[in-house]
Image 1 (tube, one colour):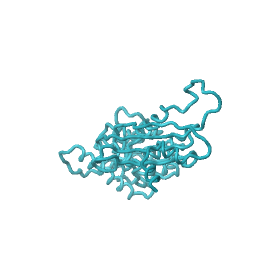
Image 2: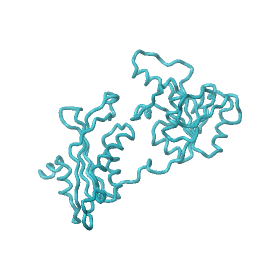
Image 3: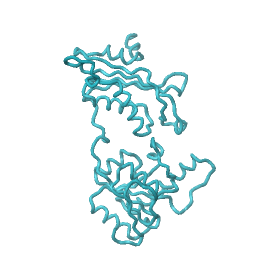
Image 4: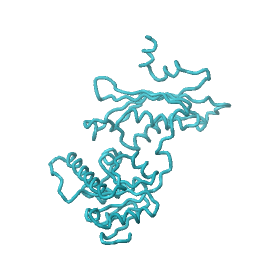
Length: 306
């Protein structure tokens, strides 16, 4: 029992050695790799970075034949640090468990990697290190949904006048006939949201005001389903479901967030369209934003054919 307890807190390299199979494998390790990261589910962890420490051991299939001192024949340490950097840059995460899972999955895509031990610890959340450790083997993890091909959606921004228009259902009918996944975006309602002298809090209030209006749109047509996460959006696009973007989570979790403020809702929608490589963004009843990186098309709110 004492040996099991010791191994539970030992470095992943010791756990790798203690649980080795009869088939000999080589090991490469990354020790005490510290990165400043914005991560965490608590409000106090938003908008600030904290030190996160990575200890990773990768068991690799031994090479057959001479290495010839050729770096291209081995699993480079850079591939391990690149896996960490890629997942940290992909999106802001709440859980170390999610980060560990994604780093392990990415490392195991390397042909030589057979098993990986990932330990991640927060160094600034208390008097000690708080963390998780996982073990994953080749073939044990399912393919992530975000690795699959997702069709390019059409994003449609609806002004408040467009939401209230009797033509709304006809527009949705026409758009669905094109066969593209549809994501609707809206701004806040015409009723002004509370105004306070606190930048971060005001941003949250303005995002919530957009989400309230998203539910107003959802009440107009049952095909408009409000979604707030990448997972929900990906599922909707793959399954032909129209949806309405509730922006708070994606905006606040974005590593490289939008420069547009929630009050500039058309520009915010254009930023969102770019993150999905949208084929087109249709704007009904509002002015087009400047410098958008996706194709834009404006339609007057009294147009019956779009």
